[in-house]
Image (cartoon, rainbow, N blue to C red; front, side, top):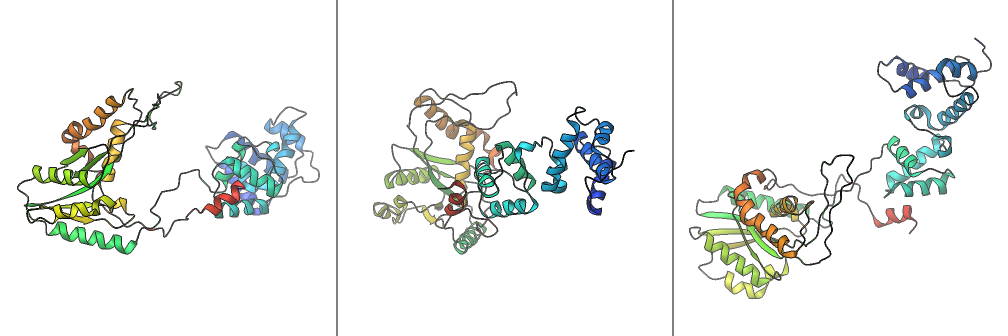
Length: 371
């Protein structure tokens, strides 16, 4: 063994970690080779001997590969051993630069890998490709995901009060009373691409529609029986609200009270609706959701089920075909298969709060995009 001045000196912690990698029964071959190479460098072996022992690169290029590994290890530490396709051209950040990058993106979110590349180039004078930046972000503990959309002005106290009121109403509900949830939906004649299982060799496309026509449907759903009462009109207003409520009463003549939960749309509070609501023979009793709390209306989930069954990955060449499919879901599919939807469309309410979330601001986006 031809020993000379050590090219790498490991700490006890690093040495133990690399020895543990080499002892593993199942470990990536490149990771094992790197770990073994650094242990040999730490033991005093020269680069040429190590390359011959571990079969690292051609005779001439082997020591160059080791040199690149040494620079990468100096910048990334032990995390370097998990990089399967490290290339010197990607540059390497020092420990301080890595920590600064991690701190920056913990505070200011990046919308894509290009913004990460731009930041690293501007702040650390290192050039990364988009794929290299994505791998760096994953090593730093970040994942690429979509933020959860939460109401900006939802009032937790009002949400809690509504849930308590609803539960009290349901507890005291008599056999001749019923509860429904009401809302309007406006499905557009558009193809909606959605995830699905396709063979990896196939290029999948969904025909797009060029129209902008839409349906306007106002409905009320009984969660106990999934009875769905609805009207379809050119627009939704106080008149369609009254028509839908009249239809609801006509379908349930034996009910002495029909409690209708709905949102605070202006037409629900319209003055022209009040005289009809105040008549002594009225069965319907309106109860309003808290402002900015669509999650407390289960019928919103029914709209999602409708889109999943009817519009996702479906192309309707004409608006008439689209209309027939949408109305067919409510008239045929829902009455026949409603039990399959009971685990999705429920009154399992929860209070929405921004506590515990990192809320993205416009400023954090501007800082990364340069806007």
